[in-house]
Length: 175
Image (cartoon, rainbow, N blue to C red):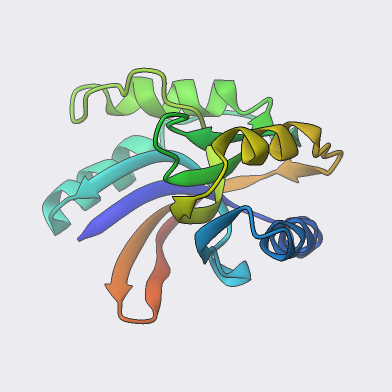
């Protein structure tokens, strides 16, 4: 099964992101798919395909992540790869410690990804007419949304013809 570790977003944060998605779509800066509101989340680690046995090990290991609730802030927009844009995302400030603990706890099961940035994917891009124009527009968008992270999840992603469907396998509460 295809899995990842993520933080769910509050509805008010999703609403702000949807407004930005709609504004970007109106500007016709790219063609592709916007991420549906119900699928918006903060990705902390993508695990790819794992079996049930490995998922059970991960559940036990992630119980060792000991952090207090903390505040995060949506910050800059970015793209995965500037040469051939495939993803438009939003960065979160102040998620580093949670991501580090997850990586450390899972290091014997998964290689640490180089340069991984915890992020919220807002669009999957197929084509961009003017890359620099899109990047400049994204740099001008300022976000001030904050929220408290009090839990994170191990999620299963099932790909369907209507897009991915996410399901919580386990939710981990923060102190």
